[in-house]
Length: 338
Image (tube, rainbow, N blue to C red; front, side):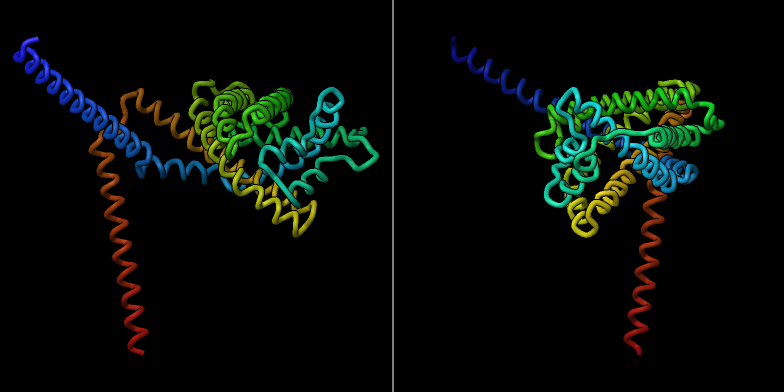
């Protein structure tokens, strides 16, 4: 190859490399700008206020506590009974599953084992009264979840008229619990159970979409529930990872103070956090669905309008900050004069 050809090839390669770097930088900048535009759109003050208003309208904190209480009275005895039945055919222990899921040790693990295990020398079972109580408590939990869906989507309440769908939902809840327990057993050995939590996201999203469709007596189309299912599944996975850090301390602290009752206190606290995520996700999912409908109908706010909302928020924040600083300065000057 002659020197001229080599020089031309070198110049061509250098220009091609420069163009490639320029295009990659431009692509990265476009992606970054698109991400910023998307975040500023969905986090804009008007939309955020609508989500907060929706959460307040369904009385989010009270609804979360009601769901947590219903879940505690329904799921603990149901877990004990299912564990006793399944252990006859396979090596299954509800307490051991919970201990492994959240890496409980010490007093917390002992309290959970005591809570979920039948007394020594006896087997878990239910009599006629126990069966009635268990049925009522599980149906009460199903109706509490049903009221959440009805209030969020502004449907007329069906109450006991939707009992058949409630029973189907309880069976589906058992299948969902078995599926997530299997994923945790297979993939939950890593740090914070991150792999298991990520794999549970599509399962949780599908279960929640199906739950909303069934508990609403099929009055809500499943595509309208997809934003709720995805949001709740992602936030639930994030909570599960965080819970792996703080739940062992919570259980150990409460169990050391109050014994087995402390485990109940810790469980109601953990369930309240879970239900708060679900209630908040239902409010967010409903508003996201409404916003997508408005966008499909051509009512999307312009970038200029979104920018104005953010500018107004920033200006109000600065004004409040200046006012607060002025009040603090006057208070400090008044104290020094004394």
